[in-house]
Length: 266
Image (tube, rainbow, N blue to C red):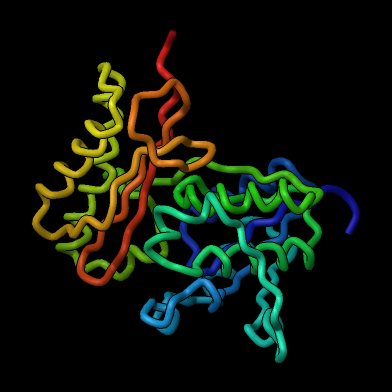
């Protein structure tokens, strides 16, 4: 395959967020490869691997219409053959947030993405900002391991009411789906307070917590105000970009979302 190659790794159950990544890759590259692989090594024993949404025929039709050149759909046996024993561990940026809630998750993510990079040899790889910690892990892996490619991070694609698009949204009941707007609402409230002059991380966390706790159907798992580059949790005001993020459960469905805040004007 000659010319520039853009890669969009996915786990399938595609939605408009994935297609936005495809469109960005299509605009900047001669060829686009999409991978569809529900990676078992990033799921814990008590997580939703077996019921994770899958609709390969629909996914393939969407990708055909989007002008994708190659769709790679490996099996677990191909990616993790008998005797497999090599793993990629990104240490510091994987420790908190989802890494603390899901031990081993990012080892699975980094390993499978490294394998997909090796198998497809892209010039650019496209990921969504919604999975901010995953992006940070992959960016660190690419730097540390000298992968000859560029990681392109695309904005989160949202529903009309602000909820971040996610394959897991299909798990929500109608009542839970209505309640889930508490997640983007919490981010907007903290961002508005920051724009109005609120700078202390503790205050920003409390604003997000209050918004979520006002929704009876929501079970807050964590809120975070961290340095956007290192994901180190902040305890004092700072002049670096901030990552606001939170994890909220609606029934058995776990939703994450985030927003980056620029440094305050001098």
